[in-house]
Length: 296
Image (cartoon, rainbow, N blue to C red; front, top):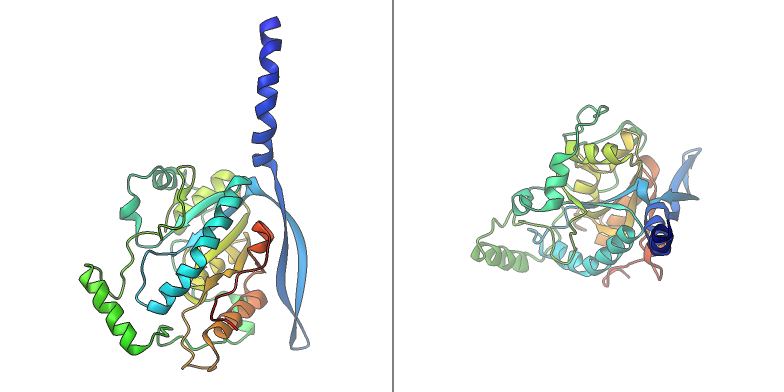
């Protein structure tokens, strides 16, 4: 008995640290846009999210892209993204890295095997393995930008030089990604998947209801992937977009003929009206929300 009593202080010393990571709540300010007689106004509400019931999904933050300007903007964001992800993980959130079409690079990684090993959920939503191009709530509004050209906003000469460089590197210039950007740390306790089924299985296995999505590109992969905002929203998850840790594929030469950054803001407004609320990275790590250098 005396030996047991002597051991207890050491056990108690370590327990609070573990409990804090498991039980920590994060109070977030969720921004939406509410409709009243055809006009939309910004509304906010605070929610306390238990971190052990929260996941952050890192969408398609690839190691390369066919659009050079998209690469430049990603390079600006990645250090901040990694800081946010590290902080959320430290507070007890689950991290899922989702660099689509790059699973071969991680076939032996513990985080990839974790995603593959998750038991099949009893409530797998219909078509959770497919892209989602629109959800019913979006029928109430008009999609705000023309992305029919793929959204590339490169200078033509620079674009040609970039594609020549990708070809010289042995990469397909139209789809050059092979892994997630190395600036975002993947830890063994995380998961790696680009499958809507696998990611849903992981969330259900852990009883996760709260989903934070960050990454690129807002108007394409972030919205439409099988693990994207639309699928999570329509299937009942409490999902938010981290609006300052994302970017769009939008060319200002297309309607509505605004700057690239204004095009991104229009997509975020569309999401806040019809898909889900948004948050910002400063709510996680403090300071000010992120803004691209070229965004005046």
